[in-house]
Image 1: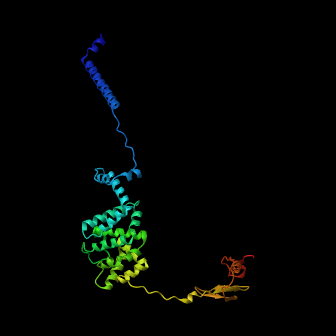
Image 2 (image 1 turned 60 degrees about the horizontal axis):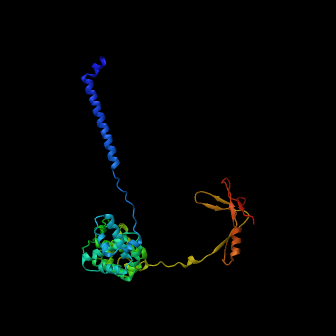
Image 3 (image 1 turned 90 degrees about the vertical axis):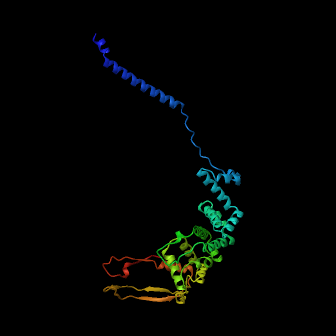
Length: 338
């Protein structure tokens, strides 16, 4: 009777309904999660795909032009590299770009310079482009482009050794100097000297009014500033043709060659003949007195054969052992047995 009355209790009935409701909710959640996971379709993992050389060569210019305007940055970057690689190995494309950097129109000149410097930024195409530009036409075009850059903006006098104005120069001039620096590091500076780089651009920089001021400001610029211009000037100064061009442009002075001292060419071999005893006494600081010693300095003409010189050097080999408790003597010298 007590169990029946307990089951009829309202509190027990409410607790039973609460437990049953919670169990149903938990069971339904588990069933729904399992159903969701079983019907989920996982997205396929992207596979890495490589463009072969045959695929790259088969792309037409119209296709490359379309890919250059693609919304995906990776596709645009890959297309730019393909175009740069083709241009670096195409002589007609290089000639068109060289013609473009010599145009008086600023926008056309900057676009051509941008195309050339973009190919130089990739290390895989830089040697090919440096080889393609290593022609008299290439050096003349770059110098001509630098000469046109002189009229694009007005430059201040380069008399402040603490102010580096290189990074404030026009972008077209900086790109030209990048081409100059790359070609100098690959092919040397002499060809730029032949193209009159010093006379047409470097000497026309505002170094100063007088010759003395120009030389002083040029030296301070090289010593105090570390940029692409100072690096190019250092290569010019290390070259014989470059030094001559700097002297003609009144940016450096001619160095006088020192006279050759012919007395230094005289070679005398001294033969030291040691007697039975050799005593050295040191009295005071820096005062050396020699006791009974027989040292004979005899000039000997160096006319011996190779074998005689080898034997003579072997006979002169010896060791000196002295612990400092007594003066140096003949007994301290251990000669080699022959």
